[in-house]
Image (cartoon, rainbow, N blue to C red; front, side):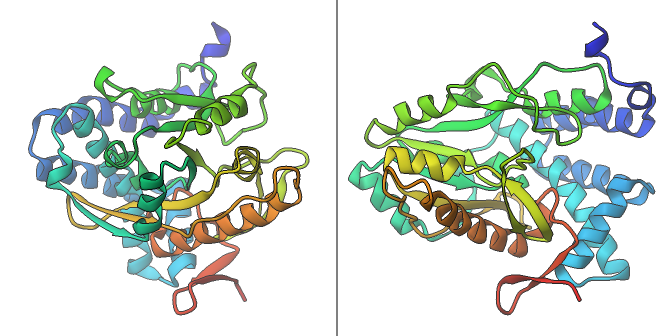
Length: 336
């Protein structure tokens, strides 16, 4: 039981308890029963309260947004508050979708680059959608309409602890029965503080993905930008980070399955019920036995995803402060 209880510092985090109970007792019931504008207003209120409180999370949001778009002063504060609030907005949509209160026909889907993807679907070609950890991706319920089969690949979760942080994570991840989708857990556990280094007993995720991709018309979704700070990780800059570790699993799975990869960014629009869905180019895998090609495929996927971070900086949880976004050339450049 001791391992299920958070540290004393976590348990005494009054602000985190406030966040948890606000989301549990105010935001989720509002999403289930109140009109959408009211629910979004309550989500924005929570974000602005969080932005005003002098916490490291608020300071980090303002700093990263200032670096990403070159903002300062009040503009940086507003952008930081928007980043914090958009996560609560995403939760509102998520809970409304699971409660059956949102229909795809009521949404405006602003899509780019989807023709190549639909051609793969029409041809019955199995492929991998390489996604980024954009907050709006939680609202991507459109995928059940586009794809005949969908296998979502996510990090395995090793239980929970009695702390407001972990309770909030469980609250955000809990699903109603009608929202369940097939999932494959990757062989790593997510623990408090971005620790991806604890191995899980489950090690057959790649086999499950390959089995799914062997069925014509299947789609596997992988979060390809996940932090991977292990020995032997592939290291490169990404978005505002000057150096980050990545796994080569997306490229390796594509190579072994001999199926293409399409990077994808999903972001909530500023207007209610608006979703930006941007697909990148079709990226072909290397030859089945050529493991050296995995780095090139990974670089192409990440280069496309980090441009999405530049276009939607408020919707990416952590962009870093080592590099800044140059909108004119759509590239991240080192800060002077």
